[in-house]
Image (tube, rainbow, N blue to C red; front, top):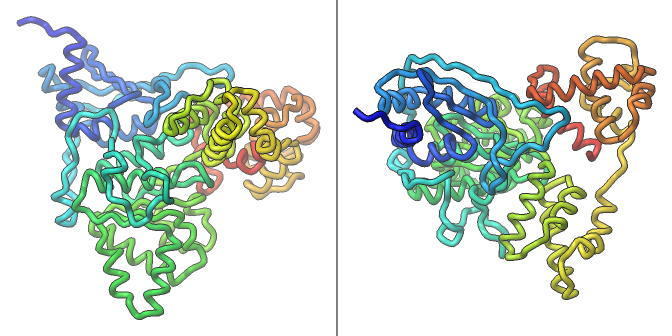
Length: 503
């Protein structure tokens, strides 16, 4: 019998795997950025990050082993490897910006060969159980064009098309949130429920919620998708109380096949509304109905939100959308310009991406301003016009960051005093914030190592160099910490601090 070539073997393996997990989920979790290869007695799986590794190992190990057995006739073990980032694409993952002294990482993780027991089917309402997901081959979870989708209850402003997941530009700042949104749309919450998307203003969480709603309506037309804001829920509840129509109000929300609520932090301090939402939440979860929420901070950090709601929100998956890096900002501008039918020079894209860092909404505003200027003046859109058109915007946006700003942000987040940071103590509760402060001072203030050392308690320059290197190592290793509620990694803490200081 002729021996199949490796490329043919791997192609057959992919086909066998796709037939087991479904084309849609295969596209989400084994598409761009994930490599599959059969080498010797193992299946080598290259993934972009630890999240993908853990998710694939936890949810698709059985399918991987079965697919490998189907094409080789042998039971192979699974080896995971953390690879580099994928090439920039809309709807796919952008590479992280290079870090100083960055080294390639490789972390093989063996998964036991014994095939996991199949999961028991979850309770679903009849309309949800009968809904089918398209099985046409695709590279990622795709949705119908906006014109073919029924407008949701929470409609976009007039003139703006419905947002779709396939139009979402992803990068290191939003990779997990995007993958989680795709999984929720594909599996209806089979892997986790609820999904809570956390971010600051203008970073894309509403786009993800709207994209999930659009996907569900396209793939599962028999499912009643309720997509609202927390303010609309509150107003509806108060009106139902006033008009004695609570039965109708509850029927609408508790009869949903999927519930998507934007800005759930709006419920803070509204105890009666929180209690009503809690009962709605419990009723839907008991029926296996997927719930997607967005908020401006981690559920534990939302003031005056009841413990009952916080614990239920944490029972699913909480993902954070951070401020996009320069590569992601540039890709966002390019995608939005293309959607407007405008060709913008690369030098202009780089200029805008380098100077406007706060939010995607800020980038959109700059793009609109550039297009308006070139249309009204008849001038060619080049770097000179961009500098003129955005001069005031950039001047008012940019703010000089000083050592005092860094110190104030660190002390506020960690609830310590400036004297604590400058003291001789080496307790982790103080030394950890101090090292983060030194790293941020070096990155955003531009002060010398000696100057930073003097500011933080008269320390010498070698102490600051050591602290800066340690923080960079923590970032490279994505180190997990347990010092602050609502934060899991050093990168998350630094992102919060940088938002505070305006870096």
